[in-house]
Image (cartoon, protein in one colour):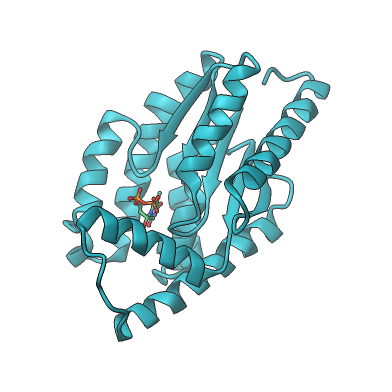
Length: 221
Ligand code: TYD
């Protein structure tokens, strides 16, 4: 079973993935955790190009193609083989992030995003996508606190640029919720502004429900 986690920055995806992996392993499932951009050797090489800012000057279209190239490598060399080998795969971001970051806030046309998605995933759609949702300001603050801590810049002050950033985050939040509304069978929206434990309970319940549905339909978890 292929589980993806989506949401804005600072919503706590990596913590929840770790907790879900622990709970599923305790139930006897083999679990593989991975992330995008990256996850496989080819995709990690592309991750470096994208996140270092190296592709930024070449435009959003170029970035979208690179994300798709990385995703294709990730799907074919890691995700599909792990699933075929009987593992559950938990992935931090996947195709919905391209739809939101490159498509909505990057202003790329939907047909281009659709085409890149088809190429990159090559038929491998997530069985369930957990969308961690919280007010944009809260997520932004958490992401910033984490970044400042890492950079030891605790006394940075908000400015005009950061206000623009908030509007972008709000747009992304709405775009993730829109994806969930359009694909309600695959997507589960989880309120991420609660305690870590409460969120983890809901995430596990959603995944367990999907496992039972699949077992009822005669598919191995
Ligand atoms: P990362 O440092 O992994 O951040 P996060 O903890 O938020 O996941 O950086 C991933 C960044 O790449 C994040 O800002 C979202 C962005 N991204 C896209 O723009 N498109 C994509 O398809 C993916 C997978 C990520």
